[in-house]
Image (cartoon, rainbow, N blue to C red; front, side, top):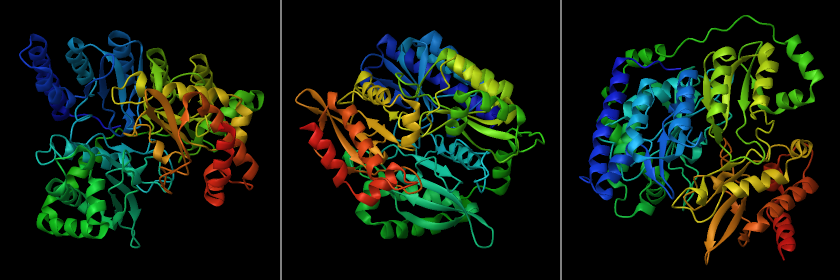
Length: 551
C-alpha cells in the first residue's frame, strides 16, 4: 500500500490539532451547534439519532494490519466494540462522544489515517477495485491513480466548497467492482490501439432521488492528461451547479439538464484553457507509484496439494473456496474475500476482536494487505493456496467464515432508522430477516448470484436502485413500508431497477423476496443469473406472483 511521507504525516497531524481546538470551542459554548456543524462535517463527524458518528477515510479501501488494529482499539475504547464498513470503503463508528473525537483523530494520525473530506461538499474518498494489484484482469494498478487523485483533491482551493458532495470511482478491470457508472465521475482504465494507457470518462451518474447511469463523455482520454480534464469537469460543475436547491445540486442533474454532448463540449472548452500545464508531471506520478510498498511473491506451483487435500476432507472449506476465493495473477496464490454478512448479523459490521483477527491474518499470511470492498466485505488479496486452510480455520473461530460472497445473503444495507436521522425505515432488520430466510447454504448456492441492496430512505446509501432486487424503506403515516425494484446493476452492465408495484409492509418483505426467488427458479434458463432471467422475461411474472401472495 501507499507509504506516507513526512508531508502526508504532517498534513493529517495538523488537521487533528486544528480540530481539537474547534471541539474545545464547541464544548465551552464559544461555538454554537450551527457554527460547529460545518467544521465537524469536514472532519467526518455526524450527529445522528443517538450519538455522534465518525466516518474514517480508508482511501480506495486499502489498509494494513497496524491500521486495522488501531481501528479495533478505537472501537473498544471509544465505541461499543465494533465498526461499520461502508459502500465507500470507509469505516464508521456510531457511538462517539464529542469530547473523545480529538483523541481519536490523534490516534488515527499516528497510523497515517484521518477523517478528512469524508463529509462536506468536497471530493470524497475515491472508490477503487478491492482486487487491485492482485487480479490478472487489470490493465494498471488503479490504486496509484486513486492516490494521485486523493492528493490532488485534498483541500484543493477550487474544489473544497462544491455545490454538493462529489464522488469518484476508478477501475482497471473489465469486471467493475466499484459501481463506477453511478458515481459523479467514473474512470475506467483502457488501452488504446497503440497500447497507450488512457481512461474512459463517465460523468453524471448517481443514485438518491433521481438515479442516473452516467454517460461517457470521453471514450479514451490519454492517461497523462487526466488531471487537467478532471479540473475542467469540476470547473464546469462549479460554474453551473445549483446552490439554491440541495435536491438539484449534484452534477448528475447538471449533466441531465445540459445533455451529455453539451456538457462534454463545455468541458472540452475549459480543458483547452487549462492546457497540459494542469496535468500531473510524469515524475510526480512515478513518485506516487514508487511509494507503494513492493509485494514480493514466491515462485509457487499453480496448484496446492495441501489446499486440495484439506478441501476434499472438509465440505465447509470446499464451499468457502467456491464462493469466497478468486483467481490471483500469480500461480499458487488466491484472493480471499471475507464476508461481513454472517446470517443474523448486521451487514458490514465487524467487531474489534474480528478486526484484530483480520490484522493478524494479513500480517502472517497476506503480505500485510487488507482491502474493504464496495459491497461491505473485506479482502485479503495475497494469500498462498497452502495457507488457505489455516486462514479459513481462524476465520471460522471468529465468525467470519460465511461462504456467501455474491449470494443472496451477501446484502448491502445502510444503517437505516436504527441509527440515521434521515431514514424513514429500518434497513438492518430487513436484511437480517431475508438472510435468515435463505440461511440454507445449499439453497443459496442453487440460487446463485443475486445482489440485494437495501436503503432506509431515498438518499440511497444502500444503493437499492442498482440491486438485482432493491428495497427502499418509506414512511406511510408513521408505519414502515418497503418499495421493491428489480433489474438494477452497479457493475459494468449498470442499470437502474424498475419498481415492482405498491410498497409492502415490513412483515411482508422477506416473504416477497422468497416469492421472487421461486419465480426466478421456475423461469430461468440454464446458466442464467436472477438478473439475466429478469431481463429476458420482464417484470410481469415476478409482479403477478408477489401481489397475488400479498393479497
